[in-house]
Length: 231
Image 1 (tube, rainbow, N blue to C red):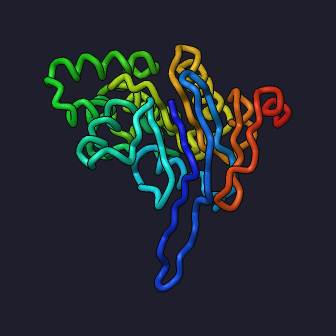
Image 2: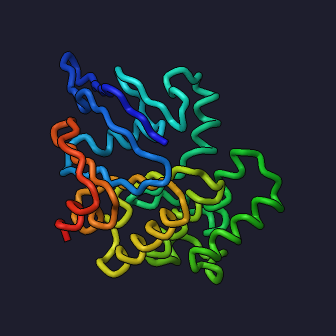
């Protein structure tokens, strides 16, 4: 699903250059559940933003589903991203003036899906997230866990094969965080590729593979037996 080779990302800070990613190389197989783990400033969120098309690398190559992203013009990349990648953010990133169903419909509006079809699909996905009775609630009327479920529903409504989750339990209490991790595991078990950025060992422990970042570099690749030692 993901193939990255020698990825570098530089930021200009006045007359200085800060290198956020250093020669990062790794693969994520289709259907895998992978954690990108590191402390604040390790480069993991920068890497996630590059993978999701929210930022562009300075150098290196990135293939998504067998296609080299660097060859896409911005419009093509936008269309491919909308159909291939679902995003889940730590801060939920819900539109406060829209109800749960309105937030979930947004990706389908960008695809110009007819209103009746997108409404039906949004209802189905919210129901699957256990929010069938919260369709018309605004974000402020929902708990943190419910808001994150809305965010996951929004990420899934277009049926993307890849889900990118940036600290998906970071703003949740322990029990609610476990519920969200269970949802992500179920999505993985159903065949979806899931990549989770986290600093939390308990989140990495549910993934079958852990990629560690430090100072913008990929330190090590640890597999399931190592991940469970973090519990």
